[in-house]
Length: 291
Image (cartoon, rainbow, N blue to C red; front, top):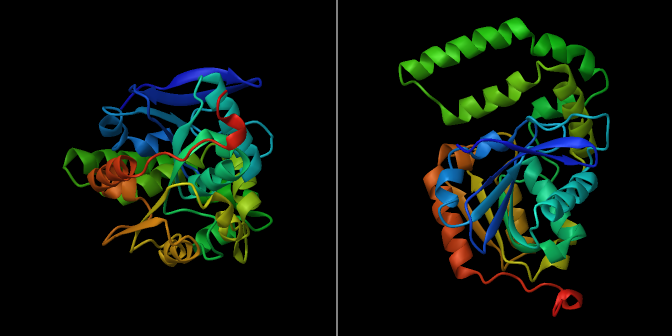
């Protein structure tokens, strides 16, 4: 896995990975309580053929965690400014979970930057979401979270995880969920997590849906990847998108949960390769042609 790089963006530290080279750029956007580390199993393969940029979103991973706006719109502007800082004009945008919602918002706000869209177990396509996130979005959750993820429990869990790895007992899905859970033992990360969560989820479920705006991106090549065992955001949301956008491509992976890129990385890489090879990038908006 590549080392993190850092830059200053509007006074905040941004941690990101920038690997590979070539004309095709992939922008990888992680999910809630995650980081660019979530892409560890696919970046080495993808970077052989593409330039891969994977940031830690503001409030996540090693990026700054200011008292700030963590809405989808704010993340979309932040990503645009990051691409400008890196000198990237256009990219294939790939988002998982919350990152899928951010990706769709990015496409909606800044279509000129987007060549293709890949959504993996994406948020923002329906109301259903796991009960844990609904509970954590409730008022007062910040008082419970230090109890939910106390440092002694995290330390003990990390020791157990190291021992299991040493004896070759590993669950990619479980490791990803533990990584998200353990990050919440850090107070600034907790605060940023709650601000992010409450911008998209309440006790009734997801509060933001892009389904009514997808027709605005009908010319953008789109692929959706989902696991049929996803217990956090149901695969039915992928089918719902396919109904609204019949020209999109839906790939459902059997036996896979919420993290296809972690659970079946080779399959996800093959799907991305095939999608890019078979889908010419969307043309930039007319106003940008001939720049």
